[in-house]
Image (cartoon, chains in turn blue, purple):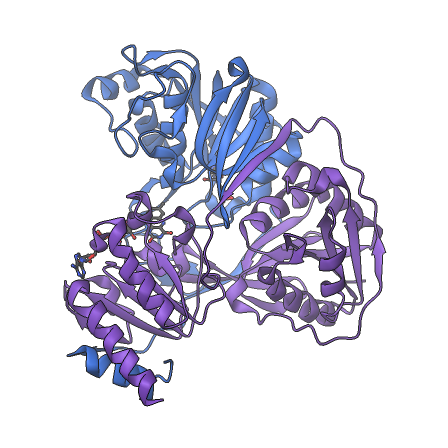
Length: 273
Length: 323
Ligand SMILES: Cc1cc2nc3c(=O)[nH]c(=O)nc-3n(C[C@H](O)[C@H](O)[C@H](O)COP(=O)(O)OP(=O)(O)OC[C@H]3O[C@@H](n4cnc5c(N)ncnc54)[C@H](O)[C@@H]3O)c2cc1C
Ligand SMILES: Nc1ncnc2c1ncn2[C@@H]1O[C@H](COP(=O)(O)O)[C@@H](O)[C@H]1O
């Protein structure tokens, strides 16, 4: 299976957000891979290896990011995890919107013909939740968003995806090629069944760490540099952010000393019980 | 110009209450844009839901009914929504940010070559909206430059539309189901609960990893029941299998904004706060006085849940008995 994984770098969510007038102050930002995209890379690796046979690889995992030159660092870390190749499409965040991102991936999909495109369900900074479904729409491919489990079926031609929906878990079957966006539980020990790795194989919880060997190998793996123009992307930015502001602050709370005091306050002060 | 089309969802043939805030959004926007509001019901055997929708104050209700649309699939529903939008000359297409809304509308946007604003929390004008970013730590104002605008609406930020209007006309629209979508609905395992919906409850009681095991959530549930509230959880509690995943509150789970939110044995990671910071009153119960959850809590109590929950239930019962 040939898999294209998308990866965006985002500010470390633990870092306090700083605003400079109307913009984010990113002078001291620590950048990292969007967590969901790291999960997508892990998913792609689990889908293309036989974990019951020394992780023998069967397939190709290519990771693509649209971003500034520095994103090389994050791409290199996905190569160290085990991805085979990376593509860096030059672009500044401020010049992008979901349409441009999706059109870019569309061009790459048409060029490289992957069987599956794996994406995060959401970018932790913009939180648009747009790119994956939009891409599937442009390509006319089926989509399975919010994937918590994936099972390869029909001899590798289709996927059974367990989707985390409001009511519980929905099972959807998509025939490849397809777009799948991953949710948190996709990195649980038994979330992926690829038809090769033993069905009862238990992965360690979470995305894998790069081994020293992986880090050395990553130095020799290719990162293709390209541009929107070279890929023939003509979309123009049409969603504009005009202001950024801090949300209204909550007024400082108090510590109560006892359950009695708490119930008293909830009843006569907050009037919520 | 400026017609608005809101996609409303159904569940077991009835209107989903989660869709009502999007109807309110649609009304406000239709007024601002000087157009009319149409509601679209998609599915099979949805006449009952259409009748309910007709009372919500829209100009009309459109029904796209077909056996092939019985189960939601983005691949079959998106073209149906697109056709209805074109027929009505809609320049805004919206829905609540439910899991269906979030899955469907970006695909609709792609097919209409439209820009999408997700999780709208406020309308500035007919083309400009407010939405949260970065786990709710920034509010962005975004301007959409496409002729057609697609929007998903944060359920907690718009009041549910009331069924107090005169019945609007209901008409059928094209419900041709595209063939060979390569997508198939296999089934859904719904976790059943007698409690109010997490996203609509006035009181939510949530437990975290500190509850240690699933069995202990019976106490969280008992407290929720006593208060007539819903039960929620942190990611860590869901991941550990203590409770079903659909109880997760947060950036990746459900966003709630009840009158009262009680967080028990939850540390208060930013991704959790993103889903409950909008609550009117927040109570935190945690044995660690340094837990970040106390920074957003109106009332913090430093103790273990083992101590707190039984005592809390006793006090509340006393209060109730006193009337
Ligand atoms: C991409 C991404 C998305 C995420 N999305 C979400 C999300 O939507 N929702 C979410 O909740 N999390 C989310 N998380 C996870 C989040 O970062 C935290 O890991 C998680 O919220 C922690 O859950 P917790 O507070 O229950 O556990 P912990 O952080 O382990 O906290 C447990 C707390 O229980 C307290 N405690 C222990 N024992 C007791 C006792 N006996 N009595 C009282 N208190 C006790 C401890 O003091 C501690 O504060 C996400 C993470 C990532 C990376
Ligand atoms: N600049 C980008 N480069 C690569 N992938 C991206 C980029 N922006 C968004 N994505 C992908 O799209 C997913 C959803 O992002 P969003 O629609 O912005 O919430 C992310 O998890 C990424 O996988």
